[in-house]
Amino acid sequence: MTDAPKMPEAKPGQQQYWDDLLQFFKPTNTDPAMLKATNELSVPFEQMAEWLMRELPANPERTVCLRHLLDAKHAAVRARLYKR
Image (tube, rainbow, N blue to C red):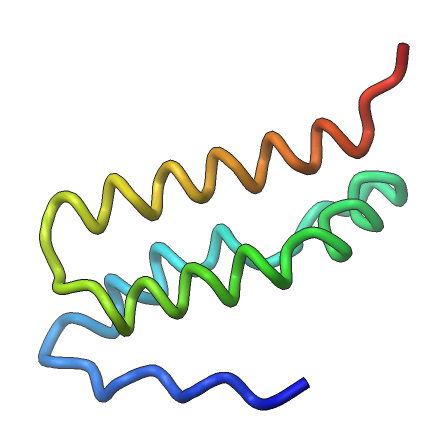
C-alpha cells in the first residue's frame, strides 16, 4: 500500500474546519465490538474524506458530500454490528 498524498497547506482558518470535520472519520468508541467494527471500517472512509478535501473546492456541496460519506461510514458500522 502506498502512502496517501499529504493534505494541502491550509489557508487561514481552514485547518480548524478540516480538523473539525475529519475528526468524525477517526475511531473513538470504547465499546469493544463497536471499536473493532469502527477501526476496521474507518480507514477507507477516512482516506476517501481526505481525498475529497484535497480534490474538491471548498463549497457547500463538498460539505454535503462529506456529510453523506460520514453517514455511509456510520451505516457501514451498523451493518457490521447488525444482528438478526
